[in-house]
Length: 191
Image (cartoon, rainbow, N blue to C red):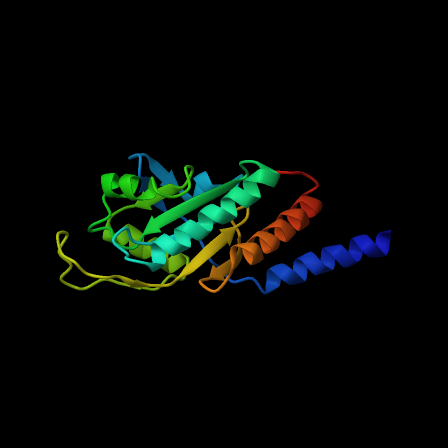
């Protein structure tokens, strides 16, 4: 029994040694106009996607995928997961634009936006690449190049994994369930 406990402790410590430092402090505004910070993520498992509301194809497909993942996870675990969408186009992604756009996806998704400096800072802390045209016109038609990952964060605010565009909902759900089980075993409690 003692060797099993020792082995598990070493396994958990070595796993965290190789984890990337992703995430950090931020304060943005929700699609309901309320302040939201990294502290509001604590106590839930978070699936965080960075994108923009004028994205013609990739962002909607990824948010649809997040909805499928959420439906599967909620059926077994309840509402311990929080989906989030952080805008990389703060010039066009106003609070009202975000609210309208996100209504087509999961009902509990939280849309976050802010000024350019705040968005740049949160993107840097999550290691998200994005590039808007230097002369971006709020009424203009332009695309925003950006990283395409769903970031999985644990209830302590620690980065777990980034799921790329090629990850299927089934793969993500399997990985998430495994991580939840390991976290609950390590902490001796559920979220």
